[in-house]
Image (tube, rainbow, N blue to C red; front, side, top):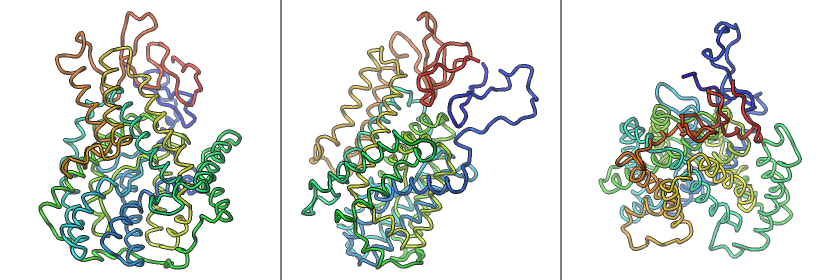
Length: 515
C-alpha cells in the first residue's frame, strides 16, 4: 500500500510519496517538512509562544498557590513556589517538544503542573503538618515520576484500545471538562470574593470573547492566528479603567531569581504519600495519552504507540526532575490543544518557544508578575473559545467513528454521560474514599476509562458485532461510495485508490486530490 500522504503547512496540498511519484524518485528536491516540524520567523515564534503561555499561565500557578497557602507560606515564599512551577513547566515542555533520545512526543504539546495532584497534596499537608508537608510531597512526586518513566513503554500499548470512537469521546470530554474552568474565571475565579459572578466581571469576559471573535472574523494571516493573545492584551487594557486589573505584584517581584534546589528541605519519603501520588501519576498518564491522541488528530500526525511512549517518558521525567527545583507533578495542558486547534499553528517550535518563555519567567519573577496582571474574567472570555474548540475537535473525530453502528453509539452515549457527572453534579462521589475520588472526580479520567472498557466489551470481546474488525487508534474503516466495499484509510487524507475522503479542516469542504 502506498505511503500515506501528508499535508503541507496550509493543509491543502498533499505531499506525494516516492511510491506515488512513480518515475520521479530522484527529483532533487527534498520533501516538504510536516507542519509540526516547520519553524516560523523569530517574531512570530515569540508572539505565538507567548500566546500559549498566556493560555496556560493560570493553570500552572493555581496548584502551587493552593498548596502554598495551605502550608502557610509567606507572600515571598509563595511567589518563589509559583516561579519554580513555571520554571519546571518550561523544562518539561522543552523535553516534550524538542525531545532527546526516546523522550518527548515532538508534538506542539505543553506541559505544566497537573491539578489532579492538588487534593492528595492537601491531604498530605493535613497528615504531615505544614512543616514537613512540602518535603514529603516532593519525595512522593519523585518516586511517582520514576515509576511512571519505567512503565511508560508498557502503558503506551493501550493505544490499540483508542480507536476514533474512544478518542472522539475523550477529546469532547476534555473540552467539556475545561469549559467550567473558563466560566469560573469569567466570574472572577475566587468564589469567596464579594464580586464573584458580578455583572462587571461577566461583562468583561463577554467583551474579551467578542474581541477574539471579531479578530478571528475580520483579520487574516498571523493577526488571525494570535487573536487570543491580542484579545487578552486588549481585554486587560479595557479592564484597567473598569477597576479589575491589579498591578500590585509588579512592585513586589524581583527582577532576577533562581529556584534553588530543595529550597524547602531535602525530600522525605512516606509510604501513604507515595501511594497517593503514584495513583495521581497513573491518572495523569491516562489523560496525557488521551491528549496526545487528540493533538495528533488535530495536527494531522496521529500519535502511535512509539510517540505516546516517548511523550509519557517526557511527562514522567519532567515530574521526577521537578521536585529538585521545588515543582510538582507535570502533565499535559489540554487548554493549549484548543489553541492549536483554533489557530492551526502546528509547529512544535512555537510551543518550545513558549517553554523557553516559561523558564525565563521562572528566572525573572517580574516577568511572571506581568503575565499575572491579566484579570481572570479576561482569561475566562478567551477560555470559552479555546476550550470550546477542543470539544469541537472531539465532535469532528466522532464524525469518523461510524456512529451508524449501535455498538459505537452505546460507547459514546454512556462514556459521555459518565464523564459529565463530575462536571454537572459536583460532589456526586462525596461518599467514596479519597483515593477513589482522585480518579472519579476527573471527568476526563472516568470518561476515558468508560470508553475504553465499553469499546473493548462491544467491539473487541468476541470479535465485535457480527465479527467486524475494530479500527486501531490511528486507523478508520472507510466505506466506499458503493457501500459494498470497506478499506482502511487514514483520517483527513485522500485514499490511495481514489475514493473521496473527509475533507481536511483547512480545505473548507473541498475534496482532496485523489493522486
